[in-house]
Image (cartoon, rainbow, N blue to C red; front, top):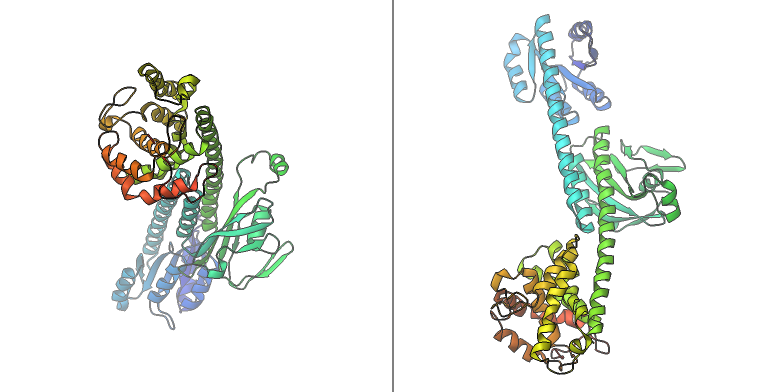
Length: 521
Protein backbone atom coordinates (compact mmCIF):
# COMPACT_ATOMS: atom_id res chain seq x y z
CA UNK A 1 0.00 0.00 0.00
CA UNK A 2 2.14 2.87 -1.27
CA UNK A 3 1.54 6.32 0.22
CA UNK A 4 3.36 9.63 0.36
CA UNK A 5 2.63 10.05 4.08
CA UNK A 6 5.80 10.79 6.06
CA UNK A 7 6.16 9.40 9.57
CA UNK A 8 8.65 10.21 12.34
CA UNK A 9 9.50 7.53 14.94
CA UNK A 10 11.09 8.71 18.22
CA UNK A 11 12.40 6.26 20.84
CA UNK A 12 15.60 6.07 22.86
CA UNK A 13 15.79 2.32 22.28
CA UNK A 14 17.47 1.43 18.99
CA UNK A 15 15.62 -1.89 18.68
CA UNK A 16 12.20 -0.22 19.00
CA UNK A 17 13.11 2.47 16.46
CA UNK A 18 14.33 -0.08 13.93
CA UNK A 19 11.34 -2.39 14.45
CA UNK A 20 8.80 0.41 14.01
CA UNK A 21 10.69 1.79 11.01
CA UNK A 22 10.76 -1.61 9.28
CA UNK A 23 7.05 -2.21 9.94
CA UNK A 24 6.04 1.17 8.55
CA UNK A 25 8.36 0.99 5.52
CA UNK A 26 6.90 -2.41 4.68
CA UNK A 27 3.49 -0.77 4.68
CA UNK A 28 4.70 1.73 2.08
CA UNK A 29 5.31 4.76 4.29
CA UNK A 30 8.31 7.11 4.19
CA UNK A 31 9.90 6.98 7.65
CA UNK A 32 12.58 8.82 9.59
CA UNK A 33 13.62 8.23 13.18
CA UNK A 34 15.23 10.11 16.09
CA UNK A 35 16.74 8.84 19.38
CA UNK A 36 15.31 11.66 21.54
CA UNK A 37 12.96 14.59 21.65
CA UNK A 38 15.52 17.29 20.81
CA UNK A 39 16.67 15.53 17.66
CA UNK A 40 13.03 14.96 16.71
CA UNK A 41 12.23 18.68 17.03
CA UNK A 42 15.15 19.52 14.74
CA UNK A 43 13.78 17.15 12.11
CA UNK A 44 10.26 18.58 12.43
CA UNK A 45 11.60 22.14 12.26
CA UNK A 46 13.51 21.45 9.06
CA UNK A 47 10.85 19.28 7.43
CA UNK A 48 7.20 20.33 7.53
CA UNK A 49 6.06 17.21 5.65
CA UNK A 50 5.75 14.89 8.64
CA UNK A 51 2.16 13.76 9.05
CA UNK A 52 2.38 11.27 11.94
CA UNK A 53 4.65 11.26 15.00
CA UNK A 54 5.23 7.98 16.89
CA UNK A 55 6.92 8.75 20.22
CA UNK A 56 7.84 6.84 23.31
CA UNK A 57 6.57 8.29 26.59
CA UNK A 58 9.57 7.61 28.85
CA UNK A 59 12.73 9.16 27.35
CA UNK A 60 15.67 11.03 28.90
CA UNK A 61 15.99 14.85 28.66
CA UNK A 62 12.55 15.32 27.09
CA UNK A 63 9.68 12.89 27.61
CA UNK A 64 7.03 12.11 25.02
CA UNK A 65 4.45 14.53 26.45
CA UNK A 66 6.89 17.45 26.28
CA UNK A 67 7.83 16.45 22.74
CA UNK A 68 4.17 16.45 21.67
CA UNK A 69 3.67 19.95 23.11
CA UNK A 70 6.72 21.40 21.35
CA UNK A 71 6.12 19.52 18.08
CA UNK A 72 2.53 20.81 17.83
CA UNK A 73 3.83 24.38 18.18
CA UNK A 74 5.99 23.86 15.11
CA UNK A 75 3.53 21.75 13.13
CA UNK A 76 -0.02 22.14 14.49
CA UNK A 77 -1.49 19.54 12.12
CA UNK A 78 0.99 16.82 13.10
CA UNK A 79 -0.84 13.75 14.48
CA UNK A 80 1.01 12.26 17.51
CA UNK A 81 0.71 8.59 18.53
CA UNK A 82 2.40 7.46 21.73
CA UNK A 83 4.13 4.12 22.25
CA UNK A 84 4.01 2.65 25.74
CA UNK A 85 4.43 -0.52 27.79
CA UNK A 86 1.72 -2.01 29.98
CA UNK A 87 3.23 -0.45 33.08
CA UNK A 88 2.80 3.06 31.73
CA UNK A 89 -0.72 2.84 30.31
CA UNK A 90 -1.86 5.71 32.52
CA UNK A 91 0.93 7.85 31.09
CA UNK A 92 -0.36 7.06 27.61
CA UNK A 93 -3.82 8.21 28.57
CA UNK A 94 -2.30 11.40 30.02
CA UNK A 95 -0.50 11.97 26.71
CA UNK A 96 -3.80 11.67 24.85
CA UNK A 97 -5.17 14.45 27.05
CA UNK A 98 -2.16 16.59 26.08
CA UNK A 99 -2.83 16.21 22.37
CA UNK A 100 -1.81 12.68 21.38
CA UNK A 101 -4.32 11.20 18.97
CA UNK A 102 -3.85 7.53 19.93
CA UNK A 103 -1.44 5.07 21.56
CA UNK A 104 -0.05 1.62 20.80
CA UNK A 105 1.14 -0.83 23.42
CA UNK A 106 4.50 -2.61 23.51
CA UNK A 107 5.14 -5.34 22.46
CA UNK A 108 3.66 -4.19 19.16
CA UNK A 109 0.78 -5.82 17.37
CA UNK A 110 1.06 -5.27 13.62
CA UNK A 111 -2.69 -4.89 13.11
CA UNK A 112 -2.86 -2.28 15.90
CA UNK A 113 -0.06 -0.24 14.33
CA UNK A 114 -1.69 -0.39 10.90
CA UNK A 115 -5.06 0.65 12.36
CA UNK A 116 -3.49 3.49 14.38
CA UNK A 117 -1.71 4.87 11.30
CA UNK A 118 -4.80 4.49 9.13
CA UNK A 119 -6.95 6.33 11.67
CA UNK A 120 -4.27 9.02 12.09
CA UNK A 121 -4.06 9.62 8.35
CA UNK A 122 -7.84 9.86 8.08
CA UNK A 123 -7.81 12.34 10.95
CA UNK A 124 -5.08 14.28 9.17
CA UNK A 125 -7.06 14.28 5.91
CA UNK A 126 -10.23 15.55 7.59
CA UNK A 127 -8.28 18.18 9.52
CA UNK A 128 -6.58 19.29 6.33
CA UNK A 129 -9.89 19.54 4.47
CA UNK A 130 -11.48 21.48 7.34
CA UNK A 131 -8.47 23.79 7.52
CA UNK A 132 -8.58 24.33 3.77
CA UNK A 133 -12.30 25.05 3.91
CA UNK A 134 -11.74 27.59 6.71
CA UNK A 135 -8.91 29.17 4.72
CA UNK A 136 -11.08 29.47 1.62
CA UNK A 137 -13.95 30.88 3.67
CA UNK A 138 -11.67 33.36 5.45
CA UNK A 139 -10.10 34.51 2.19
CA UNK A 140 -13.52 34.82 0.56
CA UNK A 141 -14.77 36.96 3.46
CA UNK A 142 -11.62 39.09 3.31
CA UNK A 143 -11.90 39.60 -0.44
CA UNK A 144 -15.61 40.40 -0.16
CA UNK A 145 -14.94 42.99 2.55
CA UNK A 146 -12.04 44.50 0.59
CA UNK A 147 -14.26 44.88 -2.47
CA UNK A 148 -16.94 46.68 -0.44
CA UNK A 149 -14.70 49.42 1.00
CA UNK A 150 -14.79 52.76 -0.81
CA UNK A 151 -12.47 54.83 1.40
CA UNK A 152 -8.72 54.40 0.85
CA UNK A 153 -7.73 55.02 4.48
CA UNK A 154 -10.26 52.45 5.70
CA UNK A 155 -9.11 50.06 2.97
CA UNK A 156 -5.43 50.29 3.94
CA UNK A 157 -6.24 49.66 7.60
CA UNK A 158 -8.37 46.63 6.75
CA UNK A 159 -5.85 45.16 4.31
CA UNK A 160 -3.02 45.25 6.86
CA UNK A 161 -5.07 44.00 9.81
CA UNK A 162 -6.63 41.18 7.77
CA UNK A 163 -3.27 40.12 6.32
CA UNK A 164 -1.48 40.03 9.68
CA UNK A 165 -4.33 38.13 11.28
CA UNK A 166 -4.45 35.67 8.39
CA UNK A 167 -0.77 34.68 8.69
CA UNK A 168 -0.62 35.17 12.49
CA UNK A 169 2.09 37.83 12.27
CA UNK A 170 3.19 40.13 15.05
CA UNK A 171 3.97 43.17 12.90
CA UNK A 172 3.79 44.48 9.37
CA UNK A 173 3.29 47.41 7.05
CA UNK A 174 1.82 48.62 3.79
CA UNK A 175 4.25 50.62 1.67
CA UNK A 176 2.87 52.67 -1.23
CA UNK A 177 5.06 53.00 -4.31
CA UNK A 178 5.63 56.52 -5.67
CA UNK A 179 4.40 57.33 -9.18
CA UNK A 180 7.94 57.17 -10.56
CA UNK A 181 8.53 53.83 -8.81
CA UNK A 182 11.70 55.07 -7.09
CA UNK A 183 10.40 55.46 -3.51
CA UNK A 184 8.27 53.44 -1.12
CA UNK A 185 6.51 55.03 1.84
CA UNK A 186 5.08 53.30 4.90
CA UNK A 187 1.44 54.44 5.00
CA UNK A 188 0.17 51.88 7.50
CA UNK A 189 2.04 49.87 10.12
CA UNK A 190 1.35 47.62 13.08
CA UNK A 191 3.81 46.53 15.76
CA UNK A 192 6.76 48.48 14.32
CA UNK A 193 8.98 50.97 16.09
CA UNK A 194 7.91 54.61 15.94
CA UNK A 195 10.81 55.52 13.63
CA UNK A 196 9.34 53.21 10.97
CA UNK A 197 6.03 55.09 10.83
CA UNK A 198 5.81 57.11 7.58
CA UNK A 199 9.32 55.91 6.70
CA UNK A 200 10.39 56.44 3.08
CA UNK A 201 12.95 54.13 1.44
CA UNK A 202 14.45 54.02 -2.00
CA UNK A 203 13.63 51.15 -4.32
CA UNK A 204 17.28 50.24 -4.69
CA UNK A 205 18.82 48.69 -1.61
CA UNK A 206 15.57 47.67 0.14
CA UNK A 207 13.76 44.36 0.34
CA UNK A 208 10.36 45.93 -0.37
CA UNK A 209 11.94 47.78 -3.29
CA UNK A 210 13.18 44.47 -4.72
CA UNK A 211 9.67 43.00 -4.39
CA UNK A 212 8.17 46.05 -6.14
CA UNK A 213 10.75 46.11 -8.91
CA UNK A 214 10.64 42.38 -9.66
CA UNK A 215 6.89 41.99 -9.01
CA UNK A 216 7.64 38.84 -7.01
CA UNK A 217 6.71 37.79 -3.47
CA UNK A 218 9.51 37.02 -1.05
CA UNK A 219 9.75 34.89 2.08
CA UNK A 220 12.73 34.92 4.43
CA UNK A 221 13.17 32.27 7.09
CA UNK A 222 15.89 32.26 9.70
CA UNK A 223 17.04 35.35 11.66
CA UNK A 224 20.36 36.75 10.45
CA UNK A 225 20.36 34.83 7.20
CA UNK A 226 22.20 36.51 4.35
CA UNK A 227 20.01 37.73 1.56
CA UNK A 228 21.36 38.01 -1.95
CA UNK A 229 18.91 39.00 -4.66
CA UNK A 230 20.68 40.22 -7.77
CA UNK A 231 22.77 43.16 -6.66
CA UNK A 232 21.07 43.33 -3.26
CA UNK A 233 23.02 41.90 -0.31
CA UNK A 234 21.80 42.46 3.16
CA UNK A 235 21.81 40.94 6.62
CA UNK A 236 18.21 40.58 7.61
CA UNK A 237 17.91 40.73 11.40
CA UNK A 238 14.13 40.75 11.75
CA UNK A 239 13.42 37.04 12.01
CA UNK A 240 10.95 35.42 9.64
CA UNK A 241 9.67 37.90 7.05
CA UNK A 242 7.24 37.87 4.16
CA UNK A 243 6.64 40.51 1.49
CA UNK A 244 4.19 40.51 -1.43
CA UNK A 245 3.53 43.04 -4.21
CA UNK A 246 0.16 44.63 -4.90
CA UNK A 247 0.31 44.55 -8.68
CA UNK A 248 -1.57 47.19 -10.62
CA UNK A 249 -4.57 45.72 -12.44
CA UNK A 250 -5.43 48.63 -14.71
CA UNK A 251 -3.99 47.94 -18.15
CA UNK A 252 -2.42 44.78 -16.74
CA UNK A 253 -2.82 43.13 -20.13
CA UNK A 254 -0.96 45.99 -21.80
CA UNK A 255 2.42 46.60 -20.12
CA UNK A 256 3.31 49.08 -22.87
CA UNK A 257 0.38 51.23 -21.81
CA UNK A 258 1.69 51.28 -18.24
CA UNK A 259 5.11 52.19 -19.55
CA UNK A 260 3.75 54.99 -21.71
CA UNK A 261 1.89 56.39 -18.71
CA UNK A 262 5.05 56.19 -16.63
CA UNK A 263 3.37 54.08 -13.95
CA UNK A 264 5.11 51.30 -11.99
CA UNK A 265 3.50 47.86 -12.18
CA UNK A 266 3.25 47.67 -8.38
CA UNK A 267 1.03 50.10 -6.50
CA UNK A 268 2.12 48.99 -3.01
CA UNK A 269 3.96 46.29 -1.05
CA UNK A 270 2.48 44.34 1.87
CA UNK A 271 4.94 43.17 4.55
CA UNK A 272 4.57 40.89 7.58
CA UNK A 273 7.16 39.84 10.12
CA UNK A 274 7.38 37.66 13.22
CA UNK A 275 5.14 34.60 13.66
CA UNK A 276 3.29 34.83 16.97
CA UNK A 277 3.96 31.18 17.82
CA UNK A 278 7.70 31.57 17.24
CA UNK A 279 7.57 29.54 14.04
CA UNK A 280 8.34 30.62 10.51
CA UNK A 281 6.21 31.69 7.60
CA UNK A 282 5.35 28.92 5.17
CA UNK A 283 4.48 28.71 1.49
CA UNK A 284 0.85 28.48 2.62
CA UNK A 285 1.22 31.86 4.34
CA UNK A 286 2.81 33.26 1.21
CA UNK A 287 -0.07 32.04 -0.96
CA UNK A 288 -2.67 33.44 1.44
CA UNK A 289 -0.93 36.81 1.59
CA UNK A 290 -0.60 36.88 -2.18
CA UNK A 291 -4.37 36.30 -2.55
CA UNK A 292 -5.06 39.16 -0.12
CA UNK A 293 -2.60 41.36 -2.02
CA UNK A 294 -4.21 40.50 -5.34
CA UNK A 295 -7.66 41.60 -4.16
CA UNK A 296 -6.19 44.58 -2.32
CA UNK A 297 -4.43 45.86 -5.45
CA UNK A 298 -7.65 45.79 -7.46
CA UNK A 299 -9.55 47.43 -4.60
CA UNK A 300 -6.98 50.22 -4.23
CA UNK A 301 -7.19 51.03 -7.90
CA UNK A 302 -10.99 50.91 -7.81
CA UNK A 303 -11.11 53.23 -4.80
CA UNK A 304 -8.78 55.69 -6.48
CA UNK A 305 -10.69 55.46 -9.75
CA UNK A 306 -14.01 56.00 -7.98
CA UNK A 307 -12.49 58.93 -6.11
CA UNK A 308 -11.30 60.47 -9.39
CA UNK A 309 -14.71 59.90 -10.98
CA UNK A 310 -16.49 61.39 -7.99
CA UNK A 311 -14.15 64.39 -8.00
CA UNK A 312 -14.76 64.92 -11.72
CA UNK A 313 -18.47 64.44 -11.21
CA UNK A 314 -18.40 66.91 -8.33
CA UNK A 315 -16.65 69.46 -10.56
CA UNK A 316 -19.26 68.97 -13.29
CA UNK A 317 -22.10 69.35 -10.79
CA UNK A 318 -20.51 72.45 -9.24
CA UNK A 319 -19.99 73.92 -12.70
CA UNK A 320 -23.62 73.31 -13.65
CA UNK A 321 -24.72 74.77 -10.34
CA UNK A 322 -22.50 77.80 -10.86
CA UNK A 323 -23.94 78.32 -14.35
CA UNK A 324 -27.44 78.38 -12.88
CA UNK A 325 -26.39 80.72 -10.06
CA UNK A 326 -24.52 83.02 -12.46
CA UNK A 327 -27.57 83.27 -14.69
CA UNK A 328 -29.60 84.34 -11.66
CA UNK A 329 -26.90 86.86 -10.67
CA UNK A 330 -25.77 84.71 -7.75
CA UNK A 331 -22.30 83.28 -7.05
CA UNK A 332 -20.72 79.85 -7.36
CA UNK A 333 -19.81 79.98 -3.67
CA UNK A 334 -23.50 79.61 -2.86
CA UNK A 335 -23.68 76.11 -4.33
CA UNK A 336 -20.48 75.08 -2.53
CA UNK A 337 -21.80 76.31 0.80
CA UNK A 338 -25.14 74.57 0.26
CA UNK A 339 -23.26 71.38 -0.61
CA UNK A 340 -21.22 71.47 2.61
CA UNK A 341 -24.20 72.47 4.76
CA UNK A 342 -26.19 69.59 3.29
CA UNK A 343 -23.46 67.05 3.97
CA UNK A 344 -23.03 68.24 7.56
CA UNK A 345 -26.74 68.22 8.27
CA UNK A 346 -27.05 64.79 6.64
CA UNK A 347 -24.40 63.30 8.90
CA UNK A 348 -25.96 64.93 11.97
CA UNK A 349 -29.33 63.50 10.98
CA UNK A 350 -27.89 59.98 10.69
CA UNK A 351 -26.96 59.48 7.05
CA UNK A 352 -23.85 57.35 6.62
CA UNK A 353 -20.76 58.94 5.08
CA UNK A 354 -21.48 57.50 1.65
CA UNK A 355 -25.04 58.88 1.57
CA UNK A 356 -23.89 62.24 2.92
CA UNK A 357 -21.17 62.47 0.27
CA UNK A 358 -23.69 61.75 -2.49
CA UNK A 359 -25.98 64.45 -1.09
CA UNK A 360 -23.07 66.90 -1.04
CA UNK A 361 -22.41 66.21 -4.72
CA UNK A 362 -26.09 66.38 -5.70
CA UNK A 363 -27.29 69.43 -3.75
CA UNK A 364 -25.59 72.06 -5.99
CA UNK A 365 -28.18 71.15 -8.64
CA UNK A 366 -31.15 72.05 -6.44
CA UNK A 367 -32.00 75.05 -8.66
CA UNK A 368 -30.97 73.55 -12.02
CA UNK A 369 -34.56 74.00 -13.25
CA UNK A 370 -34.05 77.76 -13.22
CA UNK A 371 -32.38 77.44 -16.63
CA UNK A 372 -35.95 77.22 -17.95
CA UNK A 373 -37.13 80.42 -16.24
CA UNK A 374 -37.14 83.62 -18.37
CA UNK A 375 -34.50 86.21 -17.44
CA UNK A 376 -37.06 88.94 -16.81
CA UNK A 377 -38.60 86.81 -14.05
CA UNK A 378 -35.44 85.19 -12.74
CA UNK A 379 -33.57 88.48 -12.33
CA UNK A 380 -36.43 90.85 -11.58
CA UNK A 381 -35.14 93.30 -8.93
CA UNK A 382 -38.48 93.66 -7.18
CA UNK A 383 -41.28 91.47 -5.89
CA UNK A 384 -42.78 89.02 -8.38
CA UNK A 385 -46.42 89.26 -9.37
CA UNK A 386 -48.61 86.22 -8.57
CA UNK A 387 -48.43 85.20 -12.22
CA UNK A 388 -44.63 85.56 -12.31
CA UNK A 389 -44.30 83.59 -9.08
CA UNK A 390 -46.28 80.73 -10.58
CA UNK A 391 -43.76 80.63 -13.43
CA UNK A 392 -40.86 80.74 -10.96
CA UNK A 393 -42.34 77.81 -9.03
CA UNK A 394 -42.09 75.62 -12.10
CA UNK A 395 -38.29 75.43 -11.69
CA UNK A 396 -38.67 72.57 -9.17
CA UNK A 397 -40.58 70.39 -11.63
CA UNK A 398 -38.33 71.45 -14.52
CA UNK A 399 -35.24 70.42 -12.57
CA UNK A 400 -36.77 67.05 -11.74
CA UNK A 401 -37.76 66.43 -15.36
CA UNK A 402 -34.22 67.23 -16.49
CA UNK A 403 -32.62 64.73 -14.09
CA UNK A 404 -35.19 62.02 -13.39
CA UNK A 405 -34.08 59.59 -16.11
CA UNK A 406 -30.44 59.49 -15.04
CA UNK A 407 -29.03 56.11 -14.03
CA UNK A 408 -26.25 57.62 -11.88
CA UNK A 409 -26.78 57.79 -8.12
CA UNK A 410 -25.65 61.42 -7.88
CA UNK A 411 -27.99 62.71 -10.56
CA UNK A 412 -30.87 60.57 -9.27
CA UNK A 413 -30.31 62.18 -5.87
CA UNK A 414 -30.11 65.59 -7.54
CA UNK A 415 -33.49 64.91 -9.15
CA UNK A 416 -35.03 64.37 -5.70
CA UNK A 417 -33.36 67.49 -4.34
CA UNK A 418 -34.48 69.66 -7.29
CA UNK A 419 -38.04 68.35 -6.99
CA UNK A 420 -38.53 68.66 -3.24
CA UNK A 421 -36.27 71.38 -1.86
CA UNK A 422 -39.12 73.92 -2.06
CA UNK A 423 -41.61 71.73 -0.18
CA UNK A 424 -42.46 72.86 3.37
CA UNK A 425 -42.93 70.72 6.45
CA UNK A 426 -46.48 72.07 6.97
CA UNK A 427 -47.52 71.21 3.41
CA UNK A 428 -47.63 74.78 2.05
CA UNK A 429 -44.64 74.36 -0.31
CA UNK A 430 -44.43 73.44 -3.97
CA UNK A 431 -44.63 71.81 -6.49
CA UNK A 432 -46.73 69.02 -4.88
CA UNK A 433 -47.62 70.36 -1.44
CA UNK A 434 -45.92 67.48 0.37
CA UNK A 435 -45.73 67.64 4.17
CA UNK A 436 -43.78 66.15 7.06
CA UNK A 437 -41.80 63.01 6.32
CA UNK A 438 -43.52 62.60 2.97
CA UNK A 439 -40.85 65.05 1.85
CA UNK A 440 -37.69 63.08 1.15
CA UNK A 441 -34.96 63.70 3.74
CA UNK A 442 -32.71 64.94 0.92
CA UNK A 443 -35.27 67.60 0.07
CA UNK A 444 -35.77 68.61 3.71
CA UNK A 445 -32.03 68.90 4.28
CA UNK A 446 -31.18 70.81 1.10
CA UNK A 447 -34.20 73.07 1.55
CA UNK A 448 -32.96 74.18 4.96
CA UNK A 449 -29.36 74.57 3.74
CA UNK A 450 -30.48 76.62 0.72
CA UNK A 451 -32.62 79.00 2.78
CA UNK A 452 -29.90 79.50 5.40
CA UNK A 453 -27.40 80.49 2.75
CA UNK A 454 -29.82 82.50 0.63
CA UNK A 455 -30.95 84.61 3.60
CA UNK A 456 -27.37 85.60 4.32
CA UNK A 457 -26.53 86.48 0.71
CA UNK A 458 -27.36 89.60 -1.22
CA UNK A 459 -29.59 89.02 -4.22
CA UNK A 460 -31.00 91.29 -6.94
CA UNK A 461 -34.32 91.35 -5.12
CA UNK A 462 -33.09 91.76 -1.51
CA UNK A 463 -30.35 92.72 0.87
CA UNK A 464 -28.55 90.15 3.02
CA UNK A 465 -30.04 89.48 6.42
CA UNK A 466 -27.96 89.74 9.60
CA UNK A 467 -27.35 86.48 11.41
CA UNK A 468 -29.65 87.15 14.35
CA UNK A 469 -32.59 87.83 12.05
CA UNK A 470 -31.90 84.56 10.22
CA UNK A 471 -31.84 82.63 13.49
CA UNK A 472 -35.12 84.22 14.60
CA UNK A 473 -36.67 83.18 11.30
CA UNK A 474 -35.54 79.58 11.79
CA UNK A 475 -36.99 79.53 15.30
CA UNK A 476 -40.32 80.80 13.95
CA UNK A 477 -40.36 78.32 11.07
CA UNK A 478 -39.49 75.23 13.13
CA UNK A 479 -42.21 72.72 12.25
CA UNK A 480 -43.69 75.12 9.68
CA UNK A 481 -41.25 75.60 6.83
CA UNK A 482 -38.57 73.26 8.21
CA UNK A 483 -38.35 69.80 9.75
CA UNK A 484 -38.17 70.54 13.52
CA UNK A 485 -35.50 67.90 14.12
CA UNK A 486 -33.27 69.44 11.45
CA UNK A 487 -33.75 72.88 12.98
CA UNK A 488 -32.71 71.53 16.38
CA UNK A 489 -29.60 69.93 14.87
CA UNK A 490 -28.81 73.20 13.07
CA UNK A 491 -28.90 75.20 16.31
CA UNK A 492 -26.99 72.54 18.26
CA UNK A 493 -24.16 72.72 15.71
CA UNK A 494 -24.45 76.34 14.62
CA UNK A 495 -20.71 76.97 15.00
CA UNK A 496 -19.97 74.26 12.43
CA UNK A 497 -22.33 75.84 9.92
CA UNK A 498 -20.75 79.24 10.47
CA UNK A 499 -17.30 77.72 9.94
CA UNK A 500 -18.43 76.44 6.55
CA UNK A 501 -19.81 79.86 5.65
CA UNK A 502 -16.48 81.42 6.58
CA UNK A 503 -14.55 78.88 4.51
CA UNK A 504 -16.43 79.81 1.28
CA UNK A 505 -16.75 83.62 1.36
CA UNK A 506 -18.14 85.72 -1.46
CA UNK A 507 -15.55 87.53 -3.57
CA UNK A 508 -14.06 90.35 -1.56
CA UNK A 509 -15.14 88.94 1.82
CA UNK A 510 -12.65 87.92 4.47
CA UNK A 511 -12.11 84.14 4.76
CA UNK A 512 -13.23 84.28 8.36
CA UNK A 513 -16.66 85.83 8.04
CA UNK A 514 -17.98 87.80 11.03
CA UNK A 515 -20.68 86.25 13.15
CA UNK A 516 -23.20 88.76 11.77
CA UNK A 517 -22.65 88.75 8.00
CA UNK A 518 -25.25 89.43 5.35
CA UNK A 519 -27.87 86.49 4.69
CA UNK A 520 -32.08 85.71 3.20
CA UNK A 521 -35.08 83.38 2.22
